[in-house]
Length: 308
Length: 259
Ligand SMILES: Cc1cc2nc3c(=O)[nH]c(=O)nc-3n(C[C@H](O)[C@H](O)[C@H](O)COP(=O)(O)OP(=O)(O)OC[C@H]3O[C@@H](n4cnc5c(N)ncnc54)[C@H](O)[C@@H]3O)c2cc1C
Ligand SMILES: Nc1ncnc2c1ncn2[C@@H]1O[C@H](COP(=O)(O)O)[C@@H](O)[C@H]1O
Image (tube, rainbow over all chains, first blue to last red; front, side, top):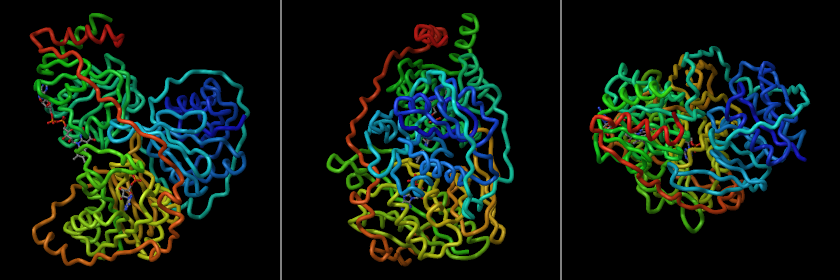
């Protein structure tokens, strides 16, 4: 069976396990990691038959694309799968140019023949596409499939690629980790609780965080909440923020503008609390409470604590 | 500094968008078209750099004839001139081909700094900046939320899921920006009047130096096979809080096994 390269950009994330799960339906999964400290046991647990270990680098992204391009030339894989993340897309874009090959981004499904299903236009349209030149290079949106384990005993192989001068033009001089506590990552979380302008100020976002923590979820925010300085930008959900597709999305004090929907409309279950009965968010909410979030949310939090 | 800003015209994300039922390309004819929002931030950043360090700002667009509207709008914010690559053969071009055309045009423009949006709101592919850097063999500082220019040295801060990174490179470079980088200015009346007289150079594919067989449907590296409208979500239960809204909400979450 042909290899399918699964690009592990940094550490093993939930999306990595989803990529391995999809890769198994297309061929034999080979994970590509860029750091020898990556959790190889986890990759094995989800079916990696091979692990290619490339050295870490202080240059931005470009060297990773060079490594993957070399592996494609040497191993002739059936496909390359990456996460639909900032870095996954950068590697995919560079790889497509290096190999003069097509690419598909934001897929939620890949069929055995390489046909990818993509969700377009704010979740309103479903598109099926195929790479017609070269092998399928596909980036997959987090939360597209449920990762399932299938233990394998991977062969580990070190890879080195000769970097070009162009690979070494942009240097990473500092990496700053901002603590986000124990909450799951926004795009990968099974539950997302988001606050909008209705939350009123940064301090009140504690209420949103509290509910998120009780539900084991991540915190999101509308653009209006971000622009008003209530919550940091990396948590923005929507057209110009993150796309999330959790099992449960809770919208608190969010009107449901089309650009916000763009980032959350494929969530499995949507719940909204808004004091305006005409708010558009109710048009897509499976369960809506018309009411003041400052009354409804604390009561809900108490109720959850009682049930625990 | 010679700065080129990449500007794409896209269908308004606030309105209904669709694919053409004939050739599955983004329907642009019937849509109300605007400048890709992220590109306005790239224009603003270019103008700020010009104001601080001098130089010239050129807008570069690849798009159908109707894209002139967005080019004039971009010019009304303050750039000096524009280049518009337009050719019937370009219809149906994939990202790989688009990057080939833009890179070829950029090769003629001798830019020190290429600024663009991090992603376009129609395709949301978020790959063009990297593809262009790869083709031109120049540095890329992508997804910047802050940019500092010191002579030929560029320093950018880019958001990551874990926090942020500080990256550096020397010009020539491509920098793609997110909407956190600045606050784009509104065109002034004077700016709008001046934009009407600013030079907009039209370039055909032949003038850019790319073969028609490498672009459009002829040169596409991927193909849309079919598309369908997702059934719109329908409203479920809606209750009005009469003192027990929170409890009822949790009761619903419990039936769905979230608590
Ligand atoms: C190109 C473009 C891109 C955009 N990208 C994004 C994006 O990525 N993400 C995004 O979110 N938006 C985006 N927007 C903005 C979007 O159009 C809306 O302006 C934004 O989503 C509104 O945020 P909001 O719902 O929090 O605020 P508002 O629209 O002001 O709504 C606040 C809601 O809170 C309710 N409320 C107030 N007080 C209470 C209370 N005490 N209890 C209960 N409810 C209360 C109100 O009834 C109201 O419905 C974009 C816009 C454009 C033009
Ligand atoms: N046809 C085009 N003409 C000019 N610039 C473009 C074009 N397509 C994409 N871009 C630029 O590339 C950025 C990223 O686009 P994309 O990779 O399509 O998401 C946009 O924000 C634009 O700045």
